[in-house]
Image (cartoon, rainbow over all chains, first blue to last red; front, side, top):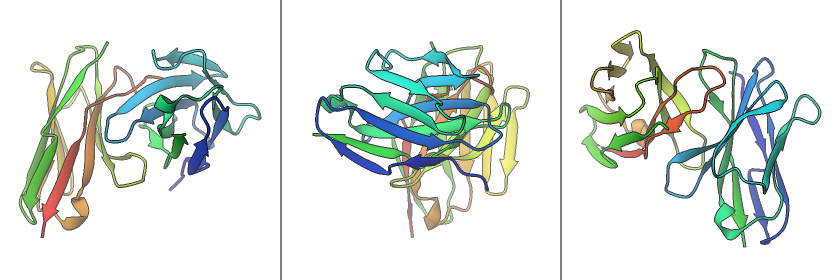
Length: 112
Length: 113
């Protein structure tokens, strides 16, 4: 079964620091997403990405966030200046269209 | 935008009994309704999904029903087993390509041996 791979699995960072979360999508998938889950809460949409550009972003995805697919394989989420409230599980998801999402196992981000 | 409500938030069921989790959605344009199982420390795993052109879908012990008129859909797990214990999320989308999912708030299902 193909998997979406996320690294690191856990990252601890100081408030104000930049973090980059990485995702390796399934190879023939075309649509890429980042979701966030604050501890004990529901999964929330952050951003979708298709054809090398953002398709849609939520209110959470402000100017501190950016995404890119720099080398055609990795799909990254960057948070420029982390805040305490950015602490959450971040999930990458990819899909080929009409076949449902595959989620990665997530990166637990802890901002201290 | 879409709003998905999910009930109950917690559910305890004796092993072997059935479990039912219900969701309602607000956007009549939504036409894709997946259910995810999330185990501790892992990402959501798709267990079953339904599209708006069908009213029911079954896969072994798991079934999903959809009532488009009432805008609600339900997950049914029969003959529950301890390994069914997890958090279950429903979600809705108005497409299944390049379209975000709106998730429900989750149900923590505990199977009592």
